[in-house]
Every structure is written in C-alpha cells, then in structure tokens.
Length: 217
Image 1 (tube, rainbow, N blue to C red):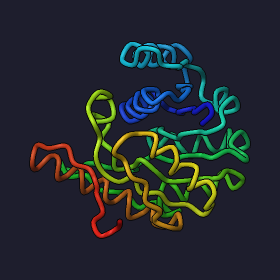
Image 2 (image 1 turned 60 degrees about the vertical axis):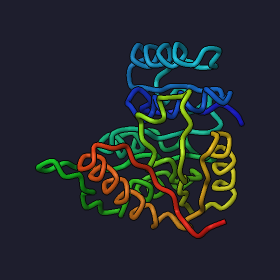
Image 3 (image 1 turned 120 degrees about the vertical axis):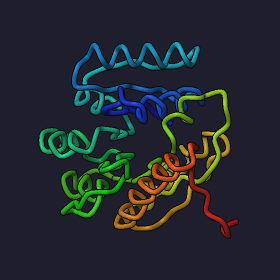
Image 4 (image 1 turned 90 degrees about the vertical axis):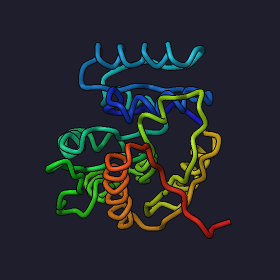
C-alpha cells in the first residue's frame, strides 16, 4: 500500500504492529528519537519476519519519506512531537494507535485530556493531517506472534472518510481482522477507555483479550 512509518516504533505496540504489517508484505520504516534504537528495532523485526522490508530511522525523517504514518509514542511524547513536526504530517494518512493510560493500585484508567482523546489531540495539533484512530484494542503480545492468527475487530474513527477507507483496506491485509467504522474522532474517547477495560480484564483473568462487535454482518 506504500511505505508505512511507525513513529515511536520501538515500543511493544509499535514493534508488534510493524511485525504484522511486514509479515503481509508491507514496507515498514521504524522510527525513534535515536537512530541506533530504530535500527535495533528494525533488526529485531527482520529477524522475526524473514524477507521483511524494514529499516529504521529518526522519527521526523522517516515521516517525510512515508505515505502512511503510524503514531505509537507514549502519550506524553505525542504533543511535543506534534508541536515540532506537525507540518511533516500534512496531507498524509496518520494512524493514531496511542492509548493514554495511567495505572493506580493495579487498575488501568484513562486520564482526563483537555482535547478529549489522543486522536482528538492529534487532529487539533496536526489539522492538515488525515488522522484515523485504529488498532488501539489489539494486544502487543498477540501482534508479535506473527505465525499465530489474530481475531477481533479493529475500530476506526476519524473525520476523513476516504482516509478511513484506506486504513480499513490495510486492516483487511491482516488475516482475520475486521475493520469497523465508528464514525467521528470523538469516539476515540470510548475506544481508549475500552482499552483500559481490556487491560483490567487481562489482569483479573490472566488472559489476553480483544474486541469483537456482535450483530454486524
């Protein structure tokens, strides 16, 4: 579908998504603030996915070189990056997979965010980007197990319908995943809260959960 840059792609979720996308033949650029860390993550992905087209680089550099940009920073790093580099995202499809989470006494929750959600913050700070929230409820552990099938729905939200349709095509490239369009970006608030719920269920039941919406053919 074109080069996919995963910014902040050295963390568990970024590496996992990179592995899955590389496994289905997508060209992946892994980003970090530090080029050696990006190169190390790219090497790990290449080792896990023989034949993968993957390389590493500095976040703001690979963002320019890619057709699609995935944001997988820790939430605290999102606003500083956008303040410095939002112009590099103009016109690009930007896939927000960030979940702003806090843990208190072993319980995950979503903090109060003035903009409402990570997705809304991204769209406000990068108004010329075509932002789509996606992949937020997928387990990093399951993503990394590239030879095991995934299951569940990937819930999409955003204001740009054509961008959502392109991201839906990307989701369909990964076997057994179904994209569902949840409408406007405001719904990313509920999706991010759902991720906190899944993590709490995982901890209680010693499981790895995902989301599947019933009643939609």
